[in-house]
Length: 460
Ligand code: BGP
Image (cartoon, rainbow, N blue to C red; front, side, top):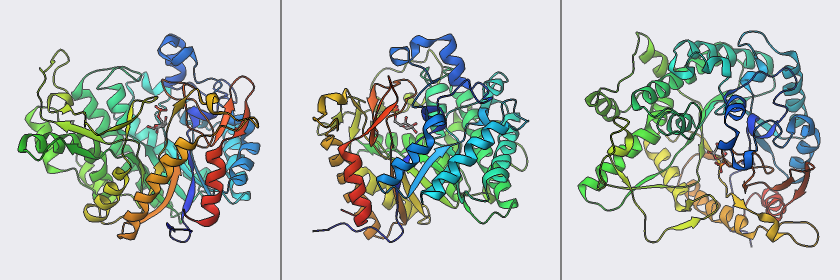
């Protein structure tokens, strides 16, 4: 018996990104991005030294892959354009890239799979990183030019765009921790990177609106609800600060057109405010998103600062709170992330109540598991019941959020087929399809088959 029916026209699909799936990193006239460069100079930073050059080779397999999307009833797919493939020198258009993206978009449409195209997924062109990447305000203009070029080339068929995927991640991983290139640990610089990214998003939205293309544009944020250890004032304050830094720093300006005053105040107190210019405020105010994509994997649990402050890198967000291990937590041990399905409901209600009930969709949700071959049956199908259960439980909570009035229009998983991950390469697998990276063969997993039926019934 069907218990959880989703709204008519609900988007069911999966997300991916250019760098993680295309491969062909040195083909088709593509320029280098920071991942290509970093792998060249420090291959040992990547799991088993596997870099971004081949990945799952979508560049050469897109046709069969899109057919595979259709086979499991996906009605939508999100991926990104590689900035360094489209504009290898930042200015001149690479015709081979145009041909490739045209073919991908046309093939998706031919198979009734609605494309959602994202412009930036962690992949700064290397020549722009050489002039300090997002720390340099000129790069904001370069991004706006890239965005405009993409709208011009593909906007006749792509009707849903997003400017950024998880813009806080390059800030957190590349400027507050040394996990992503350029491996800087400096909060003042991190704030500038975040601010310029936000300006770039607003400017791209402005370009899109000027072109009157009759579509919609949004941004994809990884919202990690911040749960305090207790209702004590100091724990509540800690959770509020974590929320300001990691959620509201992009959520408020993107949806409401303004930064939270509490965030500005906090940054000011610690002399962390970025340089601003006349017109910035209006740019952000006037260019809010039409819709929001939300990536949800795990919550953030915090308590007041109890451990000694390490100030070897000056001030950092971790000076304001400690992470808290909830005794009841359940973990995905492969990825080291807590599984907390209710988080998606809390997000739905937060958007309903505090963000004008803006249309939104789950843009990523998934479970990465290592050595999945352990679960392969005689027909080569991975029996990933754990993943099915993960999706089911999140969908139930999402459904409750929708029933209670949250304006959610879709659910995308991470991801369609196993793909390359930023640091973990092919360690943890997420796909509906298993990819054998030795021969690039794809095999449907049980979860893919399950998804097909969910879409058919538009529910569970
Ligand atoms: C998100 C990213 C994706 C993807 C996913 C899984 O944060 O948008 O690009 O990689 O997380 O994470 P990971 O690959 O680190 O396991």
